[in-house]
Length: 298
Image 1 (spheres, helix red, strand yellow):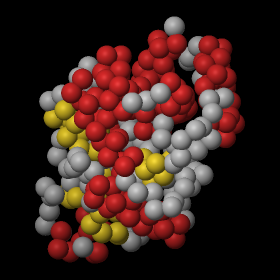
Image 2 (image 1 turned 90 degrees about the horizontal axis):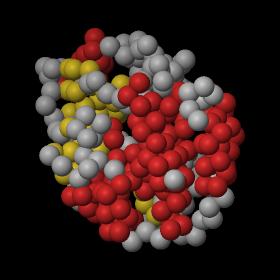
Image 3 (image 1 turned 180 degrees about the horizontal axis):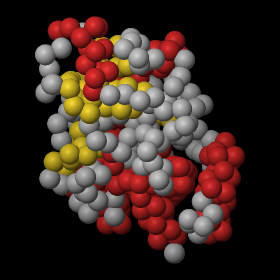
Image 4 (image 1 turned 120 degrees about the vertical axis):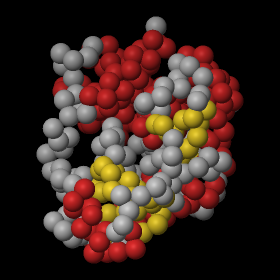
């Protein structure tokens, strides 16, 4: 089942044809579609050292190219500052072989995503996560500010989306209680200046080895945002004990911590209903995050 009404189908045959035409030096490499809970790209492994990402939702080719170029710059920048391995951009492909948009190639990182090997009870993992977030926060913004798109700016700018989420979640979640939670979280004031942020620290974007952080994926959103934004990881990835380790290691005050909870709440409310049939693993992640947030408010 497709996740989006405007989703574009991508097959290994299509990818093979594109590589043969545009990057013949890789045409002898095995091509494998990777199972993923991701919602933005279809991901194919090319040989042992590369991966190709194909946007799933149909969009204007010129606009897509600009977006992929921006993602590549952001990924390269994060890889330079990160203390943990992160993918690096390699090339951008063109439309062809029936696929209507540009696409990207980056280095492959081995490891297991946190959605498959749950590190939520590990204090060592929480310390690693804090070290990663700290490194990003210390990176220079170079005068850049939050772009105004997506999470990471003003909480109340998401009220219309949240109203949609509450409506669509009727009969699925305890909507009256969740409305009450949002009514409090949305009013939390912003105090800190923008810092550099991964902007999407969910289980599918984090690699683990044993109970430690071994790498970070989907780094194309790296950019300035609310310092609390990367604290969504506390709720998406950690149980109460390690969550407190993350907070203590980062030195979060009450306001910043609660704003992190607010961003996690906004994200979780969206994925539960939207992906309930098309991506059950993502929907389940949202439910788990909401449960953790509700438990923390009891």
